[in-house]
Length: 299
Ligand SMILES: [Fe+2]
Image: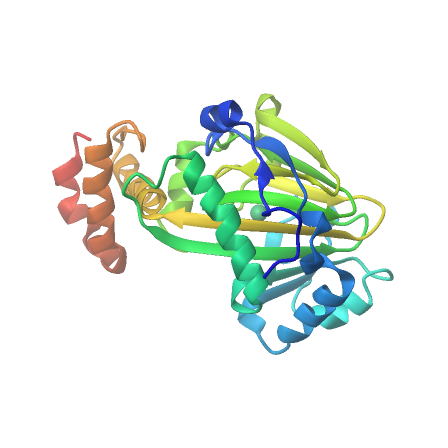
C-alpha cells in the first residue's frame, strides 16, 4: 500500500470542477510529491522495469521551439534508464506509460485518484471506461514539449522541479481540425499549427511540486521545464461517451466534404449515436462511406 498520512487526492474545488470539467483547464493543489512512490530510489527501480518494454516508453530530445513538429524531434535512441543517467548533460524527455502495469502502488494511486474524479461527477452516467492509464514524465531542465492535443481527459500533477504549462481551451481547435484527426480513429497525438491559435483561449499554469491542472480532451498545449530536472505524474482516460463523440466528429468530416454543415457533437446526442455507430461500421470500409451518407445528409 501507499505510505501516506492521508489518502492521495487532488484539492478540487467543487464549483470549479462542475463549471470547467472537460471544458476549460483549471489548476489545483495536491500532495502527491510527498509520497514515497516518487522517491529517487523508487523511480530508479521503476525505470529498470521498463527495460525492453519499447511500446510503453518514449524517450525524446527536447524541441527547439513550441511550434516544432512533434515527431520531427530525435527520439528512440536511449532506454529510459540511459536517458535518466544523462539527464543533466543532455536535453531529454522520458515518458513512462501505463505505470499501473509495472507497480501495484501506482495502480492503487490511479484507482484512488480516478475514483475521486468519478465521485465528483456523481458516477459515469452510464458510460464505460474504454481506457484509463497513468504516466510519469521525467525531463531535463530547459526542455520543450511541442504543441499538440490528445484525445483524452487528463489530470496532471507536478512532482519535482518547475513546468510552465501553456494550455488552450478546446475551443481553440476548429471543428474541421478535430474532424481530420478523429476520422483516423486512432489513439495518438493531434498536430496543429500553434501560430493559428487565438491567444484569448490561452492559459498558463506555472507548476511547482504540489500543483497540478486538469486538461480537457482536445485542449492543445505545449510545455517547458524550468532550470532543473522536472518530474510529473498524470492520468488520462477515455469513456464510451468520449469515444462516441470522437467518432461523430470523424463522421462529420465526410458530411463536410459533401459541402454540408454537420451538427456539432453534443448538440444532438441521438444524432451523435447514429453517426458514431455508422463510423464503427464504416471505419474499415472508407471507400463505401459515400454510399451511406444520404442517411445523415440532414444531420
Ligand atoms: Fe499531451
